[in-house]
Amino acid sequence: EAGVTQFPSHSVIEKGQTVTLRCDPISGHDNLYWYRRVMGKEIKFLLHFVKESKQDESGMPNNRFLAERTGGTYSTLKVQPAELEDSGVYFCASSQVHGGEQYFGPGTRLTVT
Amino acid sequence: KNEVEQSPQNLTAQEGEFITINCSYSVGISALHWLQQHPGGGIVSLFMLSSGKKKHGRLIATINIQEKHSSLHITASHPRDSAVYICAVKGGGGGSNYKLTFGKGTLLTVNP
Image (cartoon, rainbow over all chains, first blue to last red; front, side, top):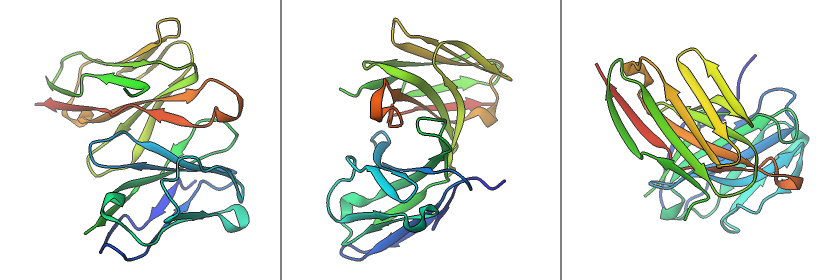
């Protein structure tokens, strides 16, 4: 069975541009999480979906970030407009049950220049 | 101060050495994860534990809930163990028990 996948693996964009990151969770996992690691800092929680609903988006840094999970399958995280401080690695994870073990994707490295 | 503190931040060892990485946390938790990230790679879950000790191959993880401390041990270390090891704790209860709080990670380099 395929694990969590993320696309793209690496994105380089200029400040002010828009980028959309995608995460495909493990099939059947209702819970999907987005995390971010910026340079030199620990990984931080961004938000949590249960199926298509946002359960907790308390970690989203500001309104330039928009996450969606239409249909409760894959999720997208859009950054518009991107700023330099948005650079980092964005990880997605999924779990079958609420509070269960989370399986991580390979991450998307975002570089904003 | 981060809720999850790891030590050391960097660790260099010779092949074959016994490795210990420590994690201390300041909040109530329901479980603790040890994660591994190779350079340029994704995150792999090594252990999830809420009490006692778990062993998988050359890796051993222990947790002391009363002392809010966990250790990850690697026996007979090998260069392929070189990676960042991350401790993450899962909240203590209620609706937040899915949310992970991470340490900054420990960069382990094992030289041949």
